[in-house]
Image 1: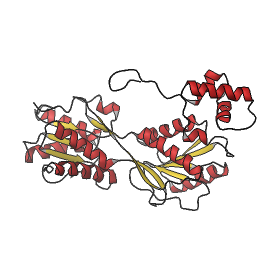
Image 2 (image 1 turned 30 degrees about the horizontal axis):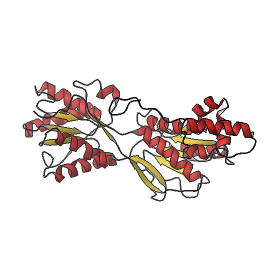
Image 3 (image 1 turned 90 degrees about the horizontal axis):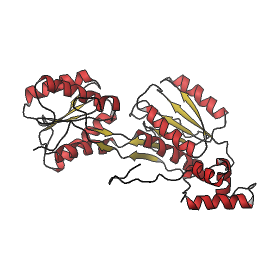
Image 4 (image 1 turned 90 degrees about the vertical axis):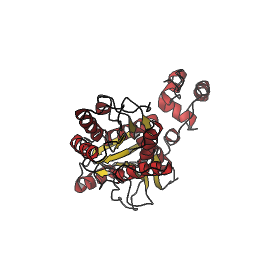
Length: 343
């Protein structure tokens, strides 16, 4: 991994690295570092020396190992085919793996009856905790406060503010996108969003509108255009915008699919991107953003980080520290060829 100056940056040492240097198993490392019994003094000393040499820092997951638990957790998803839920689960599983925790994965397929069946099955296996991954960004119904194990909701927050939820910061994402467009010298900016029933669609527009207002500007047309999360909607919305506001110089889009449709329509209209009009997407869906013409600048929701944070919060809850409320993960800007500084 390299830092912002291009220099090589060492990754943090893991339990596996310590185990390899000390010549023992990962379980032995965990026992030695957590003060567990049944570890010989010389082995414990060797492990501690290896940890010090590697500057190993135990995380909250490793601290919870072998503390009178089953060492298993549940991941309950609603849409395993979903492009958004899979990165969240990957991030959570990576974090669980760092603590040598086994994961039971179940897919409810959006069916509440199936979800209850999976929930009973997971609890019968005496899991230590549960992460529930939503299929949209909209709040989902809580499992209730009488659950026998801690529960963390990821991607889709719980409807109960006393639950623990982890989401991407969509308001912040809209602000980052608009600020980038403004920093590129654009001032006549429109917003093409997705389905207005999605909280994320409205939140991203809210953030963008606030960023523009901070610089004394409004969205072209006075408000965002809402429609479907599709390329077809992006194409149609651009045609409408150009007919009403031919002088616009920037278009923010609620998704990469919408943005690619916008690029198609601008190309058909003979408008240069980014020379005449800059375009921003959202999601950083590699198959679309990197393959668009030109490649799309976009917002990465850092969904794997959402999963990792959910796992960490679950383990702190298992340890008795319930950090209730909704925790937001900051998004990041990914710049490509569809935006450029105005000359």
